[in-house]
Length: 263
Image (cartoon, rainbow, N blue to C red):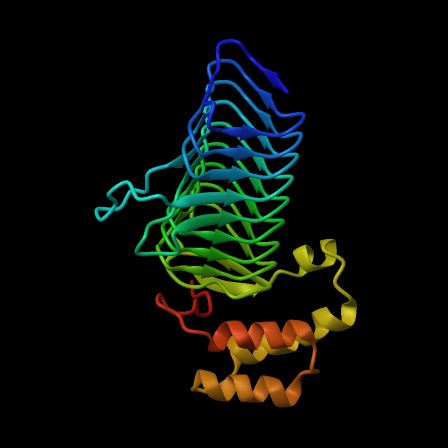
């Protein structure tokens, strides 16, 4: 370990082999930081935080601070962060609430850019990009490989599907479909995230079937959403990606599903 002499590290924190702690950083009780993670200067990590291996946490980040929730009474809740995450300057990640999951969870290989905020009880998957100053409200769920541009306020309880791309500066108050491009105010689906899917190595045949499904979802004259789901099942090939799309659409939603973008 390499711990700067100006930092304050609790004797009740557990730091594994190869951890680096920069100057003026404070690490509280009941914190676990796993192997080869680097903590920059002036970072503060509060109790109940568990940080995986090979993460890089930059200057001024705050992890595991109390949730911004009126019912919070200082309960023993958690932030759990996986491996290989990059957390840039002044990011804030709050721990969970007892009314929620009791924990805020972030997977592996995520890139969280400057001054983003992740609130209590959020669940983020892996390989996600969150750009500068995006604020993610409590109980939000973000699936793997989603990309969210900068300065996006995200409403509590929203779900954001995997492999989607959300444009910058838009208010996200509806669930964003997997594989979608989303933009506008009110937020809407502008099409399939073809560039992102190609970059992720999706087969042409899969992209073709997703195009068909999106055409039924957002351009069909079929009125009822359940009937559109049935049409997709009858028209598209039985692929995992089609099943994922339908499962997302049929799942419980508190905020409603984003519709077609309208100018």
